Structures are given as C-alpha cells and as structure tokens.
Amino acid sequence: MPKILIIDDERSIRSTLKEILEYENYTVDEAPDGEVGLDQLRKNKYDVVLCDIKMPKMDGLEVLQRARILVPDVPFIMISAHGTIDTAVDATKKGAYDFLQKPPDLNRLLVTVRNALDKANLVTETKVLKKKISKNYEMVGSSPALEKVRRAVDKVAQTDARVLITGPNGAGKEMVARQLHEKSNRSEGPMVEVNCAAIPSELIESELFGHEKGSFTSAVKQRIGKFEQANGGTLFLDEIGDMSLSAQAKVLRALQENKITRVGGEKEISVDVRVVAATNKDLLREIEERNFREDLYHRLGVILIHVPPLNERREDIPDLVQKFLADIARDYGSKPKRITPAALAFLQQLDWRGNIRELRNVVERLIIMSDEEISEEDARSFARPAVS
Image 1: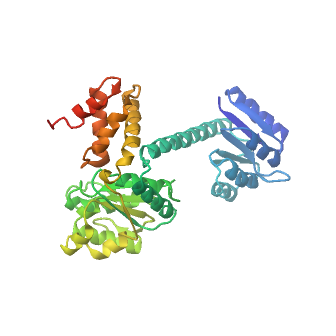
Image 2: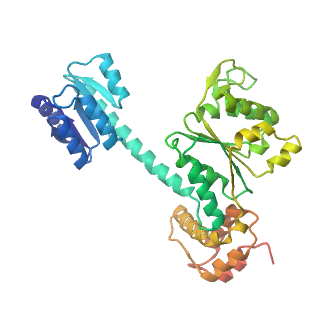
C-alpha cells in the first residue's frame, strides 16, 4: 500500500488531506513543519510527499532542496494558498513533481498523486533494469590482461575523453563500452549503439545524423539520428573501421564542433555526446590504404583500450563458464548445471578463435547435450563437434 507524507503547518489542511487519501486506501503520515518532515523522511520510506510552501522555521522549497539529497527519487507535490506561476516554476526547477493551489481540487489532487506514484514506480523499475543490464555487461575474469583493461576503464570513465576500443570480434569490446558508460557521469543518460558494419553506406549518414522529410525518395517523415538520440549520454560507434569516408568526414565535423545537420536540412543542431568507438581492424593500416581518415583516428583515439583475445587470458575461462552456466539456466528457467574441473581444464586448452562469443555458444551446447553434470567426456564430445 503506498505511503504518503503530508508536511503542512495547518492542522485542518493536514486532516482534510489525510482523510481524503486514507479513503483512497493510502497510508498517510503527518508533519507540522519542515524539520519534522525531514526527520520523518530520514526514518521512514515514503512513495509521495505533499508539502506546503509557506511554513514557519523552514519553507517548503528549502525542505524540497534538502529532501532531494536525502530521497532523490521520492516525488514532491508542492501546495500553497499563495501560488503564482513564478512559484510553480521555481518549485519545478528545484525538483518538484507538480504544484497545487489551496484548497486543492479533489480530482486534481488524486490524479496528481496517482501520476506521481506511477512515475516513482517507473524510476524504481528503470533502476532495477539498469542493474540487470549492467550485470549482463560486466567484465568477468581476473587475469592480468583483463585487470589492465579494468584499470583503464576506471581511470577514463569519469572523464568525457573519447575512447577507441580495439580487439578481435567477440572479445568483449561492447562490454568495455558499457562499463565506460555505466561508470561515467552520463550514466543516467542514454547509451546509443550504432553498428557501422551492419548499415549500408548510403544509409549511415541518415542513421547517424537523421534526415528531414523529403530529403530523399524514402524519407516520408523526419527522422532523429543517433547523435541526437544520444544527447546527454554516450554514442557507441561499433566497427567504426567499416564506416564510409563520406560519413567519416561528417562524424569528424560533429566531433570538432559538437553540432550536426540532418540529411536534407540546413539547421545546425547542438549535441552533447561522448563518443566511444570500437573496431577489430588495424586502423593505422587502414589509414595507409586510404580507407580511414587519419584526423578522425586522432579525434577518436584520445584514449586507446585494447581488449585481448580469449587465447591470451585463458585463466578467465573458468569464471566465464560459471557465469554462462548461471545466465543460460536463468534464461531456460532451469537449475544451473555443474561442470567438472577436468572439463574446465579441457576447455582452457582449446583454441578460441571466436573468443567469448564462441565460448558462450559452446557452454550452451554443453548444457543442452549433457546430463546433470558436464564431464570432460562431454566437453571432448560436444565442444568441437565438427572435429573427429
């Protein structure tokens, strides 16, 4: 049952609001002033707060500002008999969810409380989902090679420096990019991914910068590009080495000026985006072969992080296998299977050209094909089924 705190120095207002809200099956606590209200917020968990603005000792806006530090996710609905547009705007700027005038309209009050509760639930669900996503993209293992990558991520994440991540396919470059975003000051903003290799060269500019209606034959409506979608967050350009030279030139301009122009448009649009790029290609060789712009390389590669192949960090394989056993069992809705030390030792000896992606596929195959415990014999039989 949702719990609501009413902070108001007028007993009659508190009593009226409490009666209305309790009739709607809410649990309600009262506080006669701001200091008592903040003390209540420290001791109890509330879903919504109704707070008067004009109060002795401490006014409602000061209560709101202090509460943003104590309970940043709890919606505040400010109420006042002396409300003006300026007061409402000021309250909203300080973090209030909404503003109501006294005496509040009953229907408006109940709708506002319900909407505030919905928002609080969405914030909570989003945080839970973010934790799940973050866990899915954690870097698993304790090898010296992986520890080096972790140290680099920890040093760079809090800055806005552009990062170029290199390494073979399937080695975990996307995980590094995700960690850079999750540990950054932009973590509350979006992380938008673009696979440059998967988009035809003639469409990459529209994908990145958007387009205006009628700018080309199939442009039946305006489209917002990835740069704009990532505003305030991180733009991850995966397989940047496969981007066309014309698109590279526009990306370079966007990085230099922090502005983009939609295809078919004339207006410059300011964007605040941190760019993280990744590639499995040797970009220095691509520069020599005139397939990649050297100036873009230097713009992107402020910080270089290399993700080594799995064959260079075989000591991480047992930890990765255990993670995949748990993850796949959760996806299947079953109990995680055990794997013997001998089976793990055998997997560590194999050549992992497909890196972590290949290892996960092998673990899933072993789960399907083996009994309750994955033995060395299972590993020998099913890890490389095409090899006699």
